[in-house]
Image 1 (cartoon, rainbow, N blue to C red):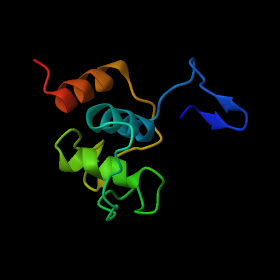
Image 2: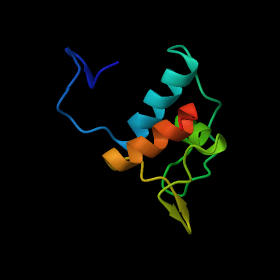
Image 3: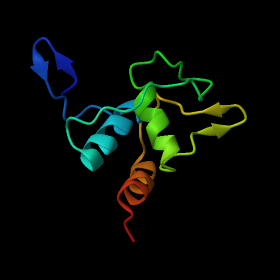
Amino acid sequence: TGCANNPLRYCPEGQVTRAEMAVFLLRAKYGRYYSPPSATGIFADVPKFHWAAGWIEKLYAEGITSGCSMSPLQYCAENPVTRAEMAVFLVRTFNLP
């Protein structure tokens, strides 16, 4: 959907956040019309009303992410995705060797 709607922009040089990446991965896996279940608020730093909470919690439920911190359980939704993290997310999402 791009990085802005008015006017429509893509921002190819921009960084991708962990929240945005959750949407990218699940849409790539399940199709563009996929919609995740409602969030319950399992991450201390992602309230259940956060725009990407359902997407993030679905990644967790599928074992694709374990978050960025365990005690308390956090996801770090606004952090940029590193190349190393992206490689792990792709392997886990698509069961790559």
